[in-house]
Amino acid sequence: MFRLVLSAAIVVATTGSLSAATCAGSDPTIASVAVKNVTQTAGLNNYDIQGTVTNATGTAQPKNLLQSVDVYLGSEKLDAKSIPPLGPGQSATFDYTFQRSKDAGTGTTTLHFVVDLHNDASDCAANAHTNDVTF
Image (cartoon, one colour):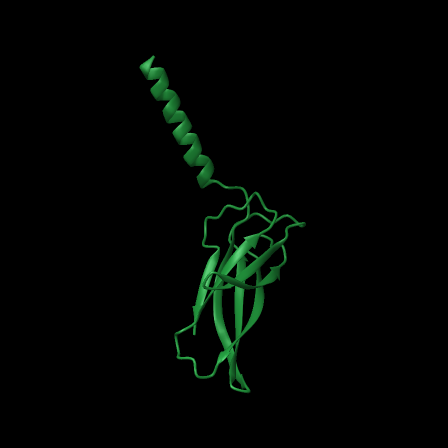
């Protein structure tokens, strides 16, 4: 009886780890995010930020997928940028402009970007769905 229970536990453990390693879904990751340009307007710096989201798997995302990149300053959600469904290895870019005082010190602001999959239950989440930029 003990051998039967032990064998069943090994099969369940092996099956669980095998299915986690071979996810058949998509895996969108924020491959990069960076400040591309800074301009000044009336005492403010306008930071033009560009990011790239890549589907890191060989599986296409569903054509009806709704997804975005959410932009956070601390815990405050500032905006959401839509991203189209991505094919295997395909990328899409997004742009965001952030304003702050021209007197703000370098390295004092960090924006956090998070992929938000609104209706994709097949997401593998093998890669980071987040990225930060500090300026």
